[in-house]
Image 1 (tube, rainbow, N blue to C red):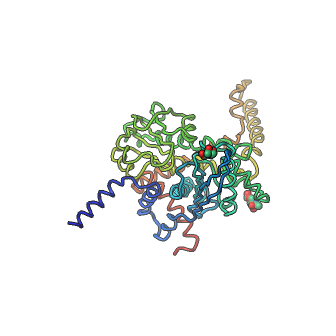
Image 2: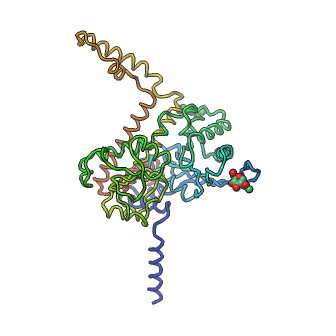
Image 3: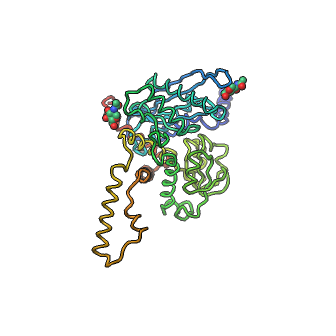
Length: 438
Ligand SMILES: *[C@@H]1O[C@H](CO)[C@@H](O)[C@H](O)[C@H]1NC(C)=O
Ligand SMILES: *[C@@H]1O[C@H](CO)[C@@H](O)[C@H](O)[C@H]1NC(C)=O
């Protein structure tokens, strides 16, 4: 009697507890793929574990004379590839678990799009709207010097980027502080990505995540067999989109194509673009979209995923969908290491070659006709940096989507598990050749 009462109470507790935490969610998704991954338990345990987690606390002297203690983190999830990479966020709910969950997602995301980095993430536990620009600058500079002292930042070690609550300005402060403390590092500007253009940033980085979301959605919606199953016609045109969250990702997704709205309205595609665990067991039943496109990191809990799938909703997972940001960060890092921007050496040469070709065509076959100035300038135009960046991004997203789709069909699992499988098996290959694991 007592025993069954206890079991009953336990079940009720487990039931009422509802959704797991964000970190638990990432582990649940990982375990689901791990169960069917072609690798050993030893390697799986290594891939799952967060390697390093740094917590720092330092004083901030506020403009009004008071002193506040600031709490901040950097998690390095996996060093199978170096440097490790991941954004820094400023938000009041930052903690060690959230930072570790986001760092793990970075590891898997980089592996899915074949960007040769390990995963990391940073967080500063403040509400950025409550601090002046000068105070934020002091916080970022102090955080960066803490990272330098602990060897947690550098072009070949760990390379931060913007995330929720940070942007190009914060990245410029990080770069300046790093270069001040490490004056002999000729690659110093590659210590952080998402910088302003004039500080070594890359053209097109701001729009990259949103554009990556767009490329993936376009490919999915152009796949006749896949959209027919949802009772939709092919193509982006005529579909209704709702974007939740109007941060950098949402704004640039919209810039490229879509319109704004809220969470439970009828639509074809729902794009959660804000923070994690926004779609949970409490509201998943009310979602009326046919496709949920995860522009945010971890917006759907495992319980919500099951509920959505029971209602035949297709989920395009974060690991693939929002990987455009880190892909273009990778291009920025390469640009900084090369100390030259894309197109500088080739653009004029390309234009001259194409001009010679079009002149020759006119002379040989034109019979006195000439190409219009418009056609001529379209054909002749050499590639600028943003042309390289966006075509590289499109190539990356298309290949990765094809791979996720093929894996999902071949291994009979949803797109999220397929993305985790691709990541796990790619990372496992690195560990297999390391000689540590039997
Ligand atoms: C002083 O400024 C800080 C940061 O702007 C703020 O968080 C704090 O509440 C202020 N304290 C007082 C006493 O006004
Ligand atoms: C800078 O990066 C280049 C690779 O682009 C590397 O060969 C070189 O060793 C690096 N230099 C330093 C000082 O880290």
